[in-house]
Image 1 (cartoon, rainbow, N blue to C red):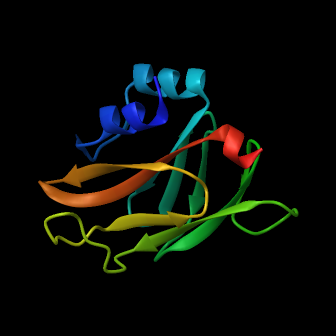
Image 2 (spheres, one colour):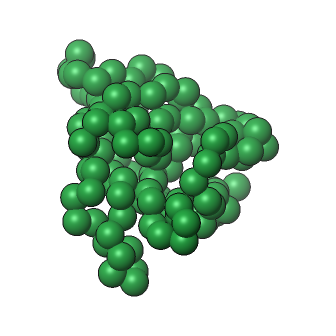
Length: 131
């Protein structure tokens, strides 16, 4: 499965816990995919090839290198993922998305909905792109 197919397969889910099935997490791990999404009003979740969570109440950033994720820059060559909380990001229908992400890491996006409203535009990237 390629990353575009995987992102499409997890898009459209309802917000909840756990957000992804064991099978989806296993598929991500097997393919070296990292899933990034928002939880509650203060967490940036990483699942799949990396399992981590970063506190980012009101937005924030994470720095990634290899399998390490931190909430502050530590080493040269780290890639940044910016979490945007209620920042005016819109879906295709013009509805505001609660959580969205910006990064220079090559990635695909997917959507999570809460009560029919856009909750999160998450990203999926390859762990090879942050090695």
